[in-house]
Amino acid sequence: MKLSKIVALGLAALCVTATVFANGGKQADGANTIKVVDNWSETHPMAAAIDNIFKAEVEKNSGGKIKVEVYHSGTLGNEADLWNGVRNGTIEVAIVGTPMNQEFPVMLISDWPFLYRNIEHAKKVWTGPIAEGVNAQFHEKFPTVYLIGWGPNSARTFTSNKKLTTVDDFRGQKFRMPGNPIHVGIAENLGASAQVIPLGELFSALETGVVDGQDNGMVTVISEHLYEVQKYLYETNHIVATLEIVVSAKFLDGLTEDLQKVVRDAAKKASEKAWDDYIVSLDNDRKFLQSKGITVTPCTTADQERIITMIKPLTDKLLSDNASWAPALIEKVKAVK
Image (tube, rainbow, N blue to C red; front, side, top):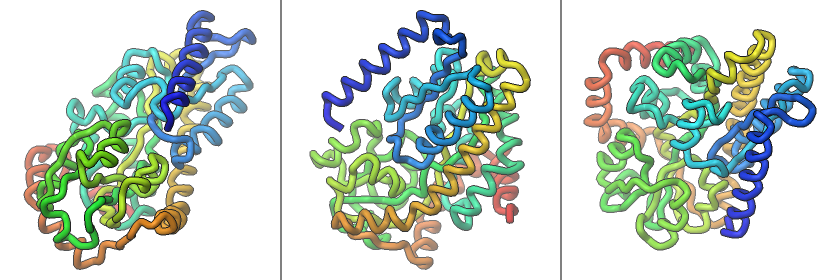
C-alpha cells in the first residue's frame, strides 16, 4: 500500500474517532457508535464477514441503536494495540490472533501444529461447544474482555524466494515468523532460521532479502501482495490459525440483555460465514497465485509425516509445558466429528 494511502486512511480514522469521542460515543441521532478494528485487508474472509454480516446484523437487529464503524488493515494500531484497546475499553470490538497467549497459554491451541483433520474439522471445533468452554475460561482470565467468536485466520503455508518444494529445502533458509514460540520452533526444527518481524514490515523484509521467506496462509500472501516478492509456496498447512472476536466487557455489559444478544449472535454468524467463505476461497487463491508465477507445491502425506517427526521436539515441549490443559483439550478437539 502506498504511503499516501496509509496516511489518508490514518487521518480519516482519526477524524472520525475524534468526532465520536467528542459526542461521548454517540452520533447526532443518539445511536451508540462502536469501533470494530482488525489488522486485515477487507478482502480477508474474516474482515469481509465483519463488514457484510456483523455490521449489518448489529445495526439492523439493534433497531439502529448501535452504529458500527469498521477499521481494517491496522488503521488504529497493530494487534497488540487493538488487544490493549479492548482490554482498557477504548475500543469496543477487535478481531485479533493470540497476542495474549503468554498471559493465557490455553490460547496456544490456536497455533497448535497439525491439530485438525482438515479445515472443515477446524470450523466444527471453533463454532461449537469447545469454543464456548474456552470462551468462559478466557473471560475468567480477562474479566474486562469477552471472547465471542472464532473465525479463520488461515491454513499456514511457507513461501520463499529460494526453491521450496520438499522438506529438505528448508535447511539453511531464513524465514520471517510471528513472535510466537510455536512458529519459531517449527522453522528451527525444520533446519531453517527464524526472524520475528511485524506483518506490516514483512513485504519490505522479503523485497530487500532480509529474509528468504515466511509462513502465512495463501489468503494473506494475496492480501499483503507477498506473491510480488516470492517465488515458491509449499502447502504444508502446518497450522490452521484462528482469529478471535473480542469485545470490551465495559461496552457489552452496558447494553440491555436484548442488545447483548444481538452483538453475540452477529459475532456467531460472522464467524460461521468467514469459515465457509475461507474454505471456498482456497482453490481460487491457489489458482491466483499460480497465475502470478508462483510455484505452488502440495505437501504430500509422506512429507507431512516427515515434518511431524522433525518438529516432535517442539510438540513434546509444548505438551510438557502445558500439561495442565493441553493433552485433555487436544483429545477433545480430535474427538470432534
